Image 1 (cartoon, rainbow, N blue to C red):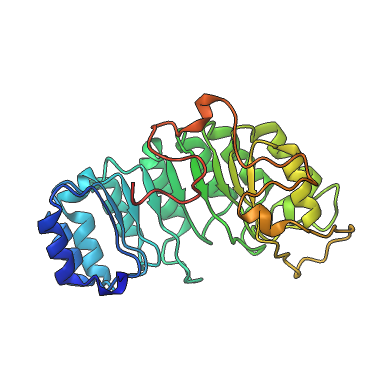
Image 2 (tube, rainbow, N blue to C red):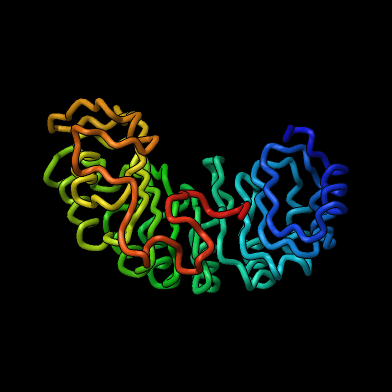
Length: 307
């Protein structure tokens, strides 16, 4: 049982699996002592670490980011850890192989400023393949991503409300600057036209943007949008899977008539509905069946942590 994984169990795993490359720790009871063990090279072959939501002090996270072992890590999930701009500087300095990074934090008081995040992306973006951010995102940062991350294939920023300056202009900058993008999370990003009140200036405009620049997309999270908008997106990009759980953001009072969804649950699980011939859960050229580095499945929305 995963909660039984403690610091001592982690040491035992290292003894039994000295060649382990990927380690996922969310949900475990690993703490400061276990992360210090990682920092000291307890897993000599480790290349991917997921340590989201662990009860680990900021000082110990900093020890890990300064350690010699972090230089070989290409995947790092720091979900819900209190990080500062100085920590991003450590990542830039000590983690040259970093390709997949999650900085998502459920705390709605960001500790990293937009300028600090922009500096990090400019310095490290050339190698990034996957990036998950949170509410600090804006059009300015989107332009930085588009200009600095040409190899990006997975970009997840769902949940940005209207108080943040993230609109179609920012998404366009990302789509134009990241030609390999296949996985996109814009769920509940209220500043996008997808969540607009008027049909023509809202979902139709968003669908036109994806038709123009999103042809390589294979998985898009659009939770919260209307059923009618979802249907339009599925027709616009029939080779992409649009992830939607059937829930509509009722805080947005649309001025167009929405449709009823009879197959939203089937959409979630990738089951084809005979009533909608436009639906596809995937497909395309052989070139699109694997990521640009050949290590990551197109259909998986998450930044890889346990490959």
